[in-house]
Amino acid sequence: MRVGVCGATPETIAARNFTRMIAAGTASHSDHGRTVANFFLAVARGEAAGYEIKDEQKLLQLALDLGVTIGERSNAEIAVDIGKIMLNEFGKQEGELLFLKRAPLKRQELWQKLGVAPRGIDREVAEAMHRTHMGTDQDYQNLLNHGIRTALADGWGGSMIATELQDIIFGTPVPVASQINLGVLKEDEVNIIIHGHEPQLAEMMAIVAQDAEMIEYAKAKGAKGINLAGMCCTANEMLMRHGVPIAGNFLQQELAVVTGATEAMVVDVQCIMQGLVDTANCYHTKIITTDPRAKIQGATHMEFDEHNAFESAKAIIKTAVDNFVNRGKNVRIPQQKTDMIAGFSHETINYLLGGMFRASYRPLNDNIINGRIRGVAGVVGCNNPRVTHDLQLDMVKELIKNDVLVLQTGCMAMASAKAGLMVPEAAAKYAGDGLASVCEAVGIPPVLHMGACIDNTRILMSATAMVKDGGLGDDISDLPVAGAAPEWMSEKALAIGQYFVGSGVFTVFGVNWPTLGSPEVTDYLFKDFEKMYGGMWAFEPDPLKAAQLMIEHIDKKRKALGIDKARERVLYDMAMRRELDAV
Ligand code: XCC
Image (cartoon, rainbow, N blue to C red; front, side, top):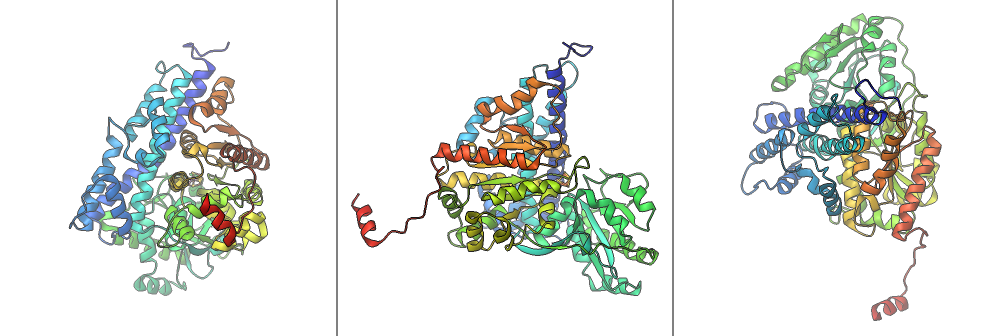
């Protein structure tokens, strides 16, 4: 057997690398969550002028969940307590993360039994780095289970904290119409692209871009106005809450520069290609970094100060406007753009299905039980230059054709939106009869945009709500659901996949698979995990074959639940009702 100089086996090495990738993904999402928690505290304490608590209902709900006294206290006082509790989750050394309590009871007990309930977010990441250091944890199974604990600290920890607190400050998304693709850029306006993941600065830029004084300033420079458009997950955040149009997903970032019409690309953290600077050097575009954690050599750094947010945003927008006069003659904006509806938070789905006074997942569960909807799939993740851009969305089409409702986030959500799958009319065109009939009755697309990648936690919450509503088993692993990231690229996607697996979801990834060097490790993730967690990994680069694997899994779960034969709806007449009453 080939082993390393120290004797490390291929299993150890593959498990180490895999666990390190999960740690990196968890750290990225969670450091975003930490920044949001600090920002939330600053807003609550009145130290971040220009921001306020937008969703009082969600604030109070979270206070109840966390045991924070409400009484006669002001929202700000309640929010300070919540902010401190949330921030404490990162450095906690003992006990369990508080949001684990949101999971179905059976799942919580399983995590405890298997010893993978995360104690503190940073602790699990640091421990993952330690265990994977040379000469430490050399039992691949032990490593991979710590990978589950680390990933759970992302999904039920850092990411969930980010989603919850952002919703409270910026508003919980509700359905909103917008457009997507490079055609949203405007030839006669100052185009500013907001790119990255954290929405604090972008939220303020949206306000400043509409400021009358700023628009006058742009006009004085010869532009008709200021056009803000998004890219990657900052785009998803701004789309979900404000309908800000999206210029493109991950692999379109350089293309936005190549239009010659982008005055500034303002970036925060994650998924920002270093090559943007070189590309921008061929045009007039300014690449502006704004976060001390993410500088790029050759870019202009204008640090965002949340305590002075309006002025920070104004300085950045002014720099972009000033750059309008430098635009060259060779401007080519592709005409392509597609209409879309986004804004499907877990709360919105609840409301859309059940109505204001009886908000619930009951109608979804009923339609799954009666077979109109076969199951639910989360199709998420990145673009990957190793495969044709956006082509993996064939998976989404295959799923909806087979009556599987699709929930999406990240760059895959954008791929579907560009293909026209995120409008209600797509149901009749692409979905199977059962799914189409439900979508038409409710007025929703067959593919629902649930937000940025941290918002995969909304999918966890939806799955949990389905369990709690009854009729589909008593754990997430009983549900007829599946997950996929057909075009994954980032370590964050791997962390997301692992927390879905650890939460009981069958999850299939495309492109390539990082543990193929060790059949033992791959088997453990693909087979043994199912026995332990009820969820497991799979690898299938062909998007249509991967969709079939998901459908097979959904059917397997339907069978186990005894709902494998789609039931015809029976309309009861009076005689039948009396008969039932008599039983
Ligand atoms: Fe990045 Fe979130 Fe992946 Fe897109 S989907 S390439 S991680 S932007 Ni998150």
